[in-house]
Image (cartoon, rainbow, N blue to C red; front, side):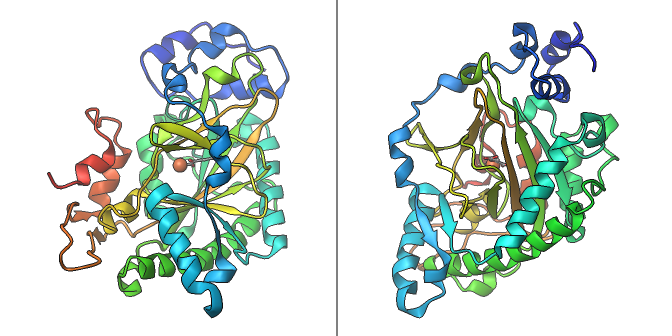
Length: 360
Ligand SMILES: O=C(O)CCC(=O)C(=O)O
Ligand SMILES: [Fe+2]
């Protein structure tokens, strides 16, 4: 294993894209992490905003079984509307994905992260300074190669750009992701149909807005020495229509922003975490919120997750739809690709990507 090189500090200062190799490697080997190695991951803004653990229990829980049952649908739809308006996040239970498929995908991703770093590094990886003290890999479904390509191009260090393909190890990897992927398409179809209804929007208008899908596998190593000073994922909103997150190992870390405080989401192994993405905020004319979230690091436990971003086809257009004719239009009509480029660009002149979609 390579020792952390003395040039690492220099690299981070030029804000270039240095993979997170050393930290995960060292953490995995249980070696003492030196203060200098960790320096580049320390974030001054970690302390911004109070963390309100006691409010974790308020994160909405939506029951898909109830949404699909005539007797309870209306009541559950009200709860869904509230969740999307007020939180932009919810735990989805009774999602109907067979246990076996979830178990297989958990096991495959777990095994993937146990591979030697040299093997994993062949896959599209987010640079450490974008993500933070963690490591993410993008895997694409065929139908969405254009999206994943774009994502990879915008975030990869040049040497990694052309190296994205399906991991061949573990051998179950592709099959389990593909099965999980098609189950998620069904779940997102139900969720989006209900989202349209709660907005009083014709579901047909949303039919194609979530059908491209790509996955990001996230690994957050433990950090014994200064867990409270580093972040696994910096605060961001998702550049998706909706995102469905599966926690591979029920370890806490995800926090969502609410009125300038951070609320931790308690892991629930039976649930998927669903959140409103930027495209849905635009399309709902701001009624449903794409909320900032971040991932913290634990001292002793690794956290592993897989995000499924459901996005509109790049060639399309996204425009706000009003629930009533009196409603004032607050967002621009934009090309999906046009917005994606703004989202993926790091030069946002201090504005959030969504601010560029708002009408003045
Ligand atoms: O790993 C998590 O808990 C969240 C990951 C996330 O926010 C993302 O992939 O966009
Ligand atoms: Fe996210």
